Image (cartoon, one colour):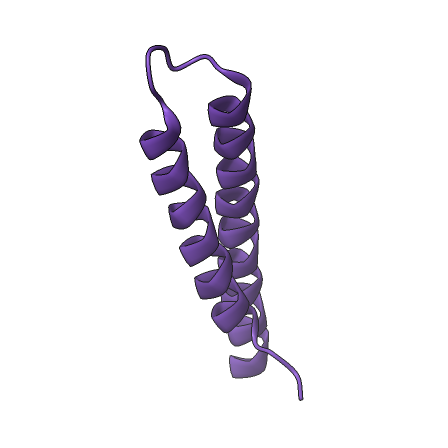
Length: 66
């Protein structure tokens, strides 16, 4: 079974939102502890992949129209 780029983008967005939520919850005294920064990096990666997958979905959709 093949997954569409849009469904994968939604999955990556949800995971990125969860990493963001966990990062916000883990910030105790200061924001700059290792675990919080690591979660922020993972969330950024997931949001970047989401944007790339949505753009891929749009490109595939436009080429199928032609």
